[in-house]
Length: 182
Image (cartoon, rainbow, N blue to C red; front, side, top):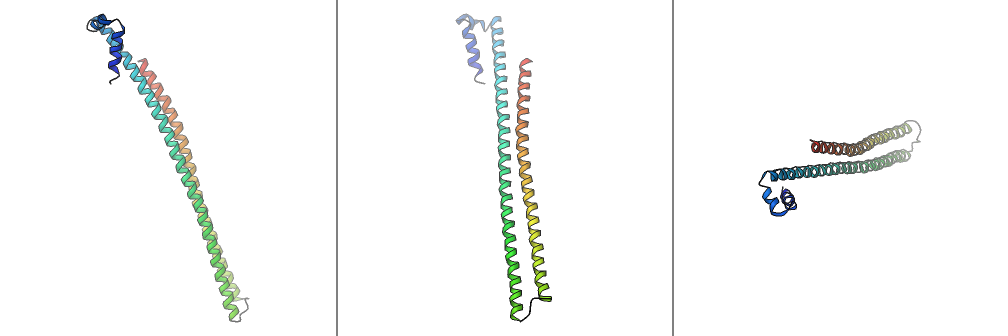
């Protein structure tokens, strides 16, 4: 506590030179030293409260920034998931078209008209691919929804952390004021 010494010396020096310095040893000096130390204690309490308030505010701000960054990262993941699902569905559709086309070519080369059993096979293949495409889409939407939900949770956590830090600031101020009154 190096800041207490100049405060004590400054108080003694302002009361009037050598008499005040000599008075520090006597009865009147004890009162002056006690007042000086009490003032120093109050100043230290105020400084500690101000520091704690600043730290609480900064902690709340940092927590909110971290939560917002996490939410932004989750939003990017959700967007990427949507693109991946779209690409997978496109690839699956192209694969379906290749298989059905190949079946038609094989049937045409064999001189088979695409009615009856070969047509049913093509429809079955197309139906299976469509089911898989829809499943991929649904699974992708669920994953994307989960990521977007988690992003929303992160935003709420950030707001709550900021709000909590404000309450802590108020609590710290009240605690500091109470300690000054005691």
